[in-house]
Amino acid sequence: MTDPQQASTPGEELQSVVEALRGARRQWRDAHRRGDDGRELPSRELLAGMVQCLSGALFPMRLGPPTLQPENEDFYVGHTIGTAMATLRQQAGLELRHEARQRGGDAPGPEVAAALATRFLRTLPGVRVLLDSDVLAAYQGDPAARSVDEVLLCYPGVRALISHRLAHELYKLGLPLISRVVAELAHADTGIDIHPGATIGSGCFIDHGTGVVIGETAVIGERVRIYQNVTLGAKSFPTDGDGNLVKGQPRHPIVEDEAVIYAGATVLGRVTIGRGAVIGGNVWLTRSVAPGSLVTQADSLAGTT
Image 1 (cartoon, rainbow, N blue to C red):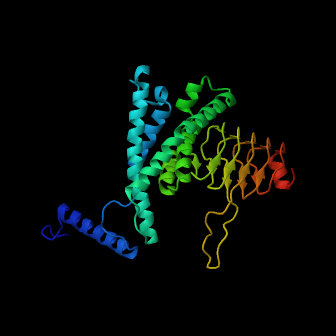
Image 2 (tube, one colour):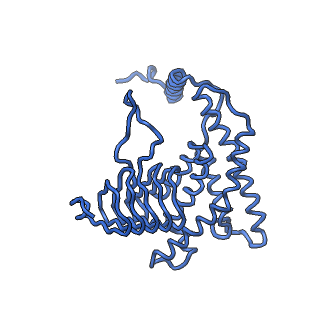
C-alpha cells in the first residue's frame, strides 16, 4: 500500500512533466540547431483567420458578416483585405526567416515580405473571376443545385477551390509553407486534398468531393469535372544516387479541358487524360488516354481504351 507521505502531489507531478517536456524540447532544438528566439513558424490559427477574411472580401454579401449592408460593401472589403494583408506580411516574414535559417543564410528584411503581400493582393481580382467560373460550373453541372448562392454557401468543392485558388497564388510567390497550411485547413474542413502547387483551370467542378486527392504537379484544364474519391497521384518517386527522393519533378497527371473523372477513379503518373475524355468509376489508370475516349473499369483492367 502506498505511503501517503511519499506519494507525489498533483503539483509535483505537473512540475515533473513540465521539466521533462523542457528537456525534450532542448534536445530537439540542439539536434536541429534551433535557437530560443521566439516563434519560428507561421500560425495555423492566424492563417485560418486570413482565409476567412479573404473569402468574405471576395464574396462580401454571401460570405461576409451577416450584418453587412450594400452601402458599406466597399468599406468592408477594403478594411478586411487590409487586415488579411497585415497578417500575410507578418506570416510571410516568419516563413522567409525560417527558410533562411534552414539554409544557413541571413534573414531577409521586412520589405521582402511586404512586397510579396502586395503581389498577392494584385491577384485577388483574377482569383474572383476564376471562382465565379467554378461556382457557375457547379451550378450548371449539378441538377440538385437550385442557385449559385446555394453552391457558394454549401458545396465543399467550392470551399476547397476558394482555398486552393488563394493557396496556389501564395505557392507561386514562393511561400510553400503558408500555402500548404492554407490547403490543409481546407482539407480538414472538406475532405478534399489539393496540393497548392496543382494548376487548375477555370470552371472546375468537384462534385461531393470527399476523398479527392490532387497532387502537387497535376495540371487540370478548363471545365473539368471530378467526383468524390478521385486520386490524381504519382505512380513512383525517383531517387538520386544516395536513395533520397528527387523533389519537384512532374509526376502527376495532366487532365485536359472538359474531361470527366467519375467517383473512385485513380490516375497515377505523368499521363495525359485527353480533352473530353470520360474516366469511369473505380478505374485504375497508369497510361495516357486519347481525347474523347471513354474508359471503363473493364477497359482499364484489360489495358485497352
